[in-house]
Length: 386
Image (cartoon, rainbow, N blue to C red; front, side, top):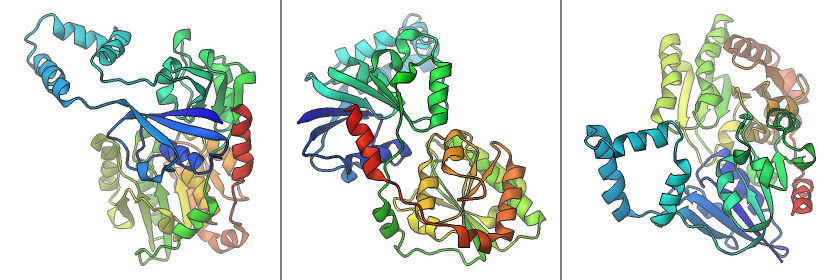
């Protein structure tokens, strides 16, 4: 039996963590023994969804005594600027990137960081945020799964995960091309593997009764309220609909901001356009599927997406989709066939295309066929790498 180690930033309700959970729930435990290394101990909203056979360990362990003595004291020192030595050292290391390796060593020395000592057959970084820790782990084979929809150019060769890993998993072909071009990653190392989706569970959970708005048309958008999701375009798209005489509708936004400041652009856009009566902020939902299923059209507004989960979930539920033309969007959606595409960062175009879909909604719904993800094929691609 091969031993697998998966690293992930957290186990909160987000796309990367949900992808890992779905993967683990389809893993063949007769062939593999799985361990998950989570970077942050307190961020585990969906830990109960991980199979019991999976061992979970934490990289960062809380040390309240150390935090109280050092970090709070240092924070006070910084605010008051009392210590002429510690203050500039800390500012330089945090804001200018100096001594970042020293900080990591310091955390390990104070026993805030715990790395497993055993050797694994395969180590898999399931989100690109945790690749540095995969580099430090003992594994005969190392794989980095690149889930972010935009490739950041890494000038320092020591920081490139592609130099130390055996394979890079890209979520879509467009992302594979970017990885090869921008960071000169070896094309032979890059493999395109899509996310796992539990088709039957999504369909079953969509049957849960929920209260939906009393409106002729319901639109929905699901995801974290963060800058790359561009949900602040929604109020301006609503204005386009109203200008075309489409007024009997509600737009459901399912999700919450990672940080309160991320909510400000959406809040300001709603106030500026006066469209609050047409938009309902539902917050994060552990089960968003009844709301998506109850929608006439699902809308994805992102300017960056590798393989958007909510778009696939809407397709599985047989709901017509309008998506921005992100790398993942253009591969998931064939414009005019199983959904429609609109340019990135263009709220006017988003509103215009949505109005078109409303005008032809009956015809679009009659053509929409529920999609089914071939999880067996996806898992076999992983097994070949292992």
